[in-house]
Length: 402
Image (cartoon, rainbow, N blue to C red; front, side, top):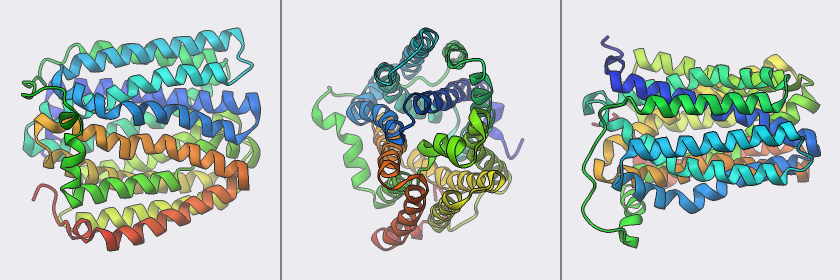
């Protein structure tokens, strides 16, 4: 058990089960949404609008959500959010069964889903450090990320397979998984902390922003990931590749969506048994550069196996970056501020995925899918070079928590 002390804690195992179920559901839904929307309009710009619908609520609500996570029961907030997302999935199922002829109702339901996710992220991430001793926190972060990625391997593939029976089948399964996550959270006994003193002033809400700005290492790690994902995210265009370039259908789309998780899970398992001994800041920079190179490879590929391999490499590089960044954030943040700091991190990282999808969809509408993906990979490499010079403190980080 030396390499997995966090897994020996029952509440942590329950947390992992709930997170795996919820995130697998979200990835299954992403596969169905992407294929359904592109099937309706055949326009990559509409895939960008899906990303925008998921981004806007996170951008507008995340700071408030962080304050909520620090002042109320994080477990209860998580359960409310999961219930709201399950309702959204059921609405999508009903709409699909009726026959959606326009993307507008889908986008409207996604706004509800994303609003719940804006509150879910800070509460979920800030609950984790309360479930394990501090010395086991990097291990818990790693197992949390790795188990999530392992579930994501099967989630998108299952979503693509179920789509053969109709999108309503996917959305109904998504709702069931979210309800499972909601019920599992109810069995977590620990994770309680006293709410911080003070009111809900603007200063309190923005405390997370000020905290990160005062720490160049955290600001550098978060902002580098933001721009790397913004420019290097090819996820929104996977339906275009599956349908028009690789010709593999919805099941192939599910495999494409799963491939990054295969790389991330494999890398996570390796890191669990061989945690980095030093130079973790430099490792993060190298990993993000590798992500950019793999993105370029994927963009140029017309071979399904080669495309899968490139996506696997992207996932492995992303896991290294996630491990370093999340560990730095969790170990550097006092518990009373974790919700607000995590909310800022969510804007930097989580919401940038959807904003990156919007950027990719619009760029693909202008120049085509392949130039959009290749250009994104090149911009990611430029971001790494610029951040290496702008944030030397990040490159100088040697050990986590040291």
